[in-house]
Image (cartoon, rainbow, N blue to C red; front, side):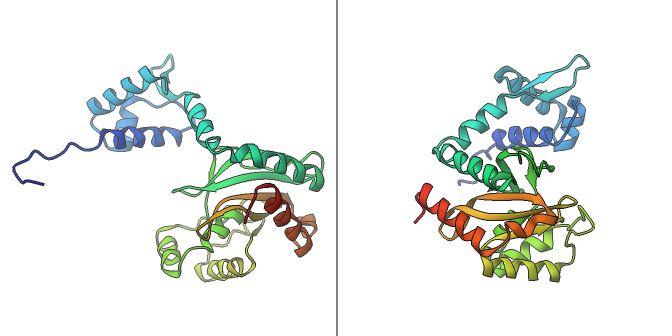
Length: 254
C-alpha cells in the first residue's frame, strides 16, 4: 500500500458481528451504553450499528429501550445447517438410534469457540437428561465430542489450546488437571471416539462418534447421552462398530 493512500477504515462488518456475538451471550435486553461498553465502541458507532440491525430485523427494542436479538438469526442459521442436505440425511439416523437405544441423541459441529449443537432427539423413556439445546456451544475439554476434536490436533495445537483455556469445573468429575486431560485426549486419539462420564453434567455420560470427516478431521459427530449407570450398554466395541457401519451405509462414507 502506498504510504500516501488513506488508511482503510476498521471493518464495519467485524464491528457488527462483534455486537451480535456479544448480545447473544446475554439472557436479557441490553442498553445501548452497555453494548457499546461491552464491545469497546463509541456510543455513536454502536447506535449506527443497532439502527441498521433493527432495519434488517435482527434486533428489536423492548418497552424499556433495551435491545435484544430476534429469531431471524435462527432462520439464517437454519439455512446454513441445511445448505448441503446433510441434516436431512442424518436426522433419520438420529431418530433410529434414539428409538433403539433409548438414549438422548445429538448432532454437533466444531466452531471457533467450542462445539455447537445442531440437532437433538431426547430419549423416549429411560433418559431425558439435560441435553444441550441446538445453537448452544459447549467447551471442548469437558465434552465427549470436544475430546474427539482435541485428539485430532497436533501436539503444538493442543498445547496452544490448553495454554489459553481455563479448565473450569462444571461438576466434581470435570478434568481440570492438564496432564490428566492430555492422557484422556491421547486415549481418545487411539480409540477414535470421545467419552465423558459426568464431566459436563452430573450423572450423564456421553459417547461421541464421528459422523462426517474431511482431511482427517471430524466435521460432525453423533453423541449418545445416557445415565452413567447404563453407559456400558453403549460404550462397547459391538455398539460402536454398529453405529459406524450404519453411518457408512447411509451417509455414503468412504
